[in-house]
Image 1 (cartoon, helix red, strand yellow):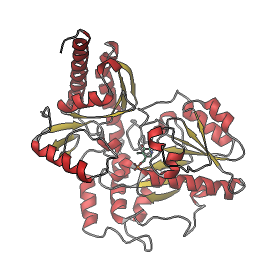
Image 2: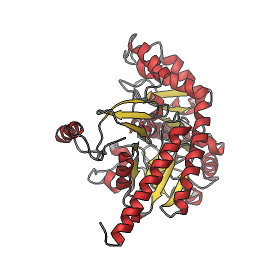
Image 3: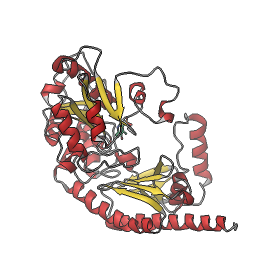
Image 4: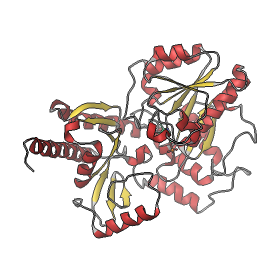
Amino acid sequence: MALDAPSPRQQAAIDQADAWGAHTYAPLPVVLARGEGAVVHDIDGHRYLDCLAGYSAVNFGHGHPRLVAAATAQLNRVTLVSRAFHAEPYGPFVEALARLCGKEVVLPMNSGAEAVETAIKTARKWGYRVKGVPEGEARIIVMTGNFHGRTSTIISFSNDTEARAEYAPYMGGFVQVPFGDADALASAIDDRTVAVLVEPVQGEAGVIIPPAGYLRAVRELCTAHDVLMVADEIQSGLGRTGTTFACDLEGVVPDVYVLGKALGGGIMPVSAVVADRAVLGVFTPGSHGSTFGGNPLACAIGREVVELLGTGEMQDAARARGAQLRAGLAPLVERGWLTDLRQVGLWLGLDVHPDLGTGKQICERLLRRGLLAKDTHGTTIRLSPPLVVTAEQVDEIIDGVTAACAEAACAEAADAAGIG
Ligand SMILES: *Cc1c(COP(=O)(O)O)cnc(C)c1O
């Protein structure tokens, strides 16, 4: 069981982090030391269930034996030669990933934001070269509530004020429409539109699932108007939704997949843009690149990730454990403790009733009960445990979330009665 307050040892580690590290995050007061599967331990040996999984970067669990074996084997061979030369693991990785996506070409990068940047560059070049948009005129349609990363270009088309404030001048060429509204998208497309950039399920926004038929409508509009459908599946892809890609939920194939997070197996930052030759063929040597993109270590891990997804076991587990978690938490909606509960695969957004406290306060209560989760946008808690979480562990999550809500409701009732 976790402690009520950090131990002196943990507090010292937290103080050191605060003193010497820039404050771009506000972490919960726990210092983690090791992990296995869905379980992590702090430096004092207390056990927690990881209900965030590194924002879905750790879909296959901490220290997955096959991923660790693939990484270790490659560590002992060669890790970086640069793209100035061919390296052994590159070919097998790009072929495997292209086949998983049903596409012809893979362009590996490192972080998710870099892959999104690469997709933006792809779409613009494709617009000028292939679609025939006059150079400098290309427009990319993006969605309200989007999260695509933190670069200066990407935050230019975010409507998260904190993520965007004081980083002007902003990059132009983006048009924002409401997420989930196909009619708004239809009216926004014009001759200069080269791409629609969409998260099939919005993760950072709080696991926002679009209305049924939306992705299909986006696909049809893109096809009809010769516009690239670019699916940012960095968080939604690679098993999380109970399918390999979230687009699969509606049987939709985008023109461009943008992948990251789980592609690196929680070991390395590995991202990629995947599309057909007609699209990624716009690049020529020198027109794009990355020192670390496609390095041997990343490729060895990425290839094993593709193998893990090949059997469908991870996707099945996401569906089964997700349904179990949803069923277990549904009574919290009936009790009024949650105002909404969204679920797709093993990915849940819980909107906590404001009377119970902020999402952060609930996460602090969860921490004391040995559950690590993250709030987003004030009152939403996102649950995305590793897909290898067991049925027993899911029961632990259900019990912990229920107890934390009950405790918060109790504290609120005591407050309202003027006690405590
Ligand atoms: C996390 C995320 C990104 C950015 O990935 P980084 O590796 O943090 O740069 C982009 N798009 C989506 C949908 C994400 O969830």
